[in-house]
Length: 336
Image (cartoon, rainbow, N blue to C red; front, top):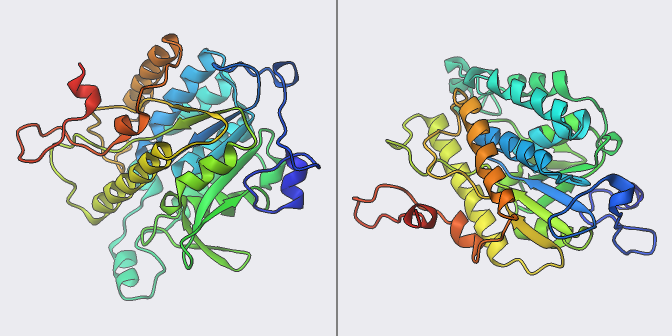
């Protein structure tokens, strides 16, 4: 799978020399799939502080013997994927990722400084928030300098700010690639790579990612971070509003991608957490989110990772204000 990436920089569908997708057997890589033998990809979406959810999902997948050959990360999903790709998809590696998450605070990732914000409004700073905190976090924990050198193959998704098209990065500088994938527009500065101005991959077309990926693997596990569907009150701060809006957009992209998916690979959409009352900029609930996601995913796997009849329906946008005019109750809640 590596050789094709080198031949086609940024390609989403690396394959063998004859153009066919590479498919290893369990004897080659120790993979145990729900569907059968073959290669497996994990797709980790964005979601700000809700990225902690993915840690619990990954732990449950590990516990049940589901192993990835390839990681595709977007936004905070790229941050999680980079750690797993470097430290290994192991019990210890995932425990270390959980420790990082439980130690994070909002100021570690989104440091708010009035002077910086005013400078951004005046056009003297490229973003409302400095990306120094996130960059420092990645610098401390990334174990590889180049994406192509990651022990476990990974790629990240960013968005070209000019064309609006998704850009899949599979080689080159790892730090700038992950920073580009997580560059929330206006909050973080864009990242320039190879003449392209890149921002958060959550804006990209998730359908294209899944369709291309389905040509090279047998099983795709989608790990949504989710969105805060049960906030007691709407977010009031500009940071909270921006994060909530982006997570809703990402969820919309996922719904559309799953709804229209008709690829060759078996698509497994891991159930998200619902109801979810944690803001995407609140890092104080990481431990609880990890534990809850682990339990939810474990139960799903114990039932055979059964695919819901209409996975897009269970990703659909909704809220839990059942007494509000026009409110929509989520199908998972209604089924309880």
